[in-house]
Picture: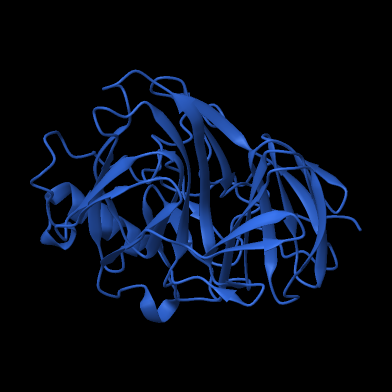
Length: 338
């Protein structure tokens, strides 16, 4: 089928991806991303989307899949970064200073290394490999993410989940999940990160129907996995190579399946790990700018102004010894992509 698409070139200016992200939960792409800027796909079941990449810090490579001019959201998943894998000297890890969020949940899946989360609610939590940190910003929260001084490795996926209309101003919260359910299916180790997969339910609390699964194959394997035809899906390689319905999946692309499919054929090479995300198409258009998700421009402008003024909406993080992040200038308008 032919693909028809019209998107705004949101969230990417400055030399295409000059600043993909400072990494983890801070977004340095500062143009406004409108999730309703892409025409919906009709009878188009599969597409390949190129990833954007940048190198930060001590050689840490960030690869961004969402948002892009090709695809803004997959279900309520509105942001997806893959950080690493990388190694660095002790003391040279990531140091992401205080920054705000509204209207979303940040979801961190740690594959290798550790990271300390601190937030304006007073939470401090070290995340270790095979664990999830979930921060619900709701009306407003700020946080930091810092590698421990002794840490030398980093490999993680971080995603944002747009909150639905009735939860967008909910009270902020933080949850840590040290264990996730793991099942074996046709030679694939499936860690159920979010939602239900193969009759196995993740404990991670989200507010829309979503799916997130880490798929790892110790040996090369092929499998046919069942899908929910109501969902759209995305596949991203975290390690190694794979193919999705015959489409090659590499470190440079994401394979997206539109709603309507009941199964997918997956081939994963030995030692390969892929991330599967999915969900029902989101109920409302969203605006994503910097680290903020809202429904209209004025909402985002107000949050920016309050952050710059030190408004109590975003609290403080006394345990962090360093400056807060400054909000970038708000864009005057959105511009159409070519």
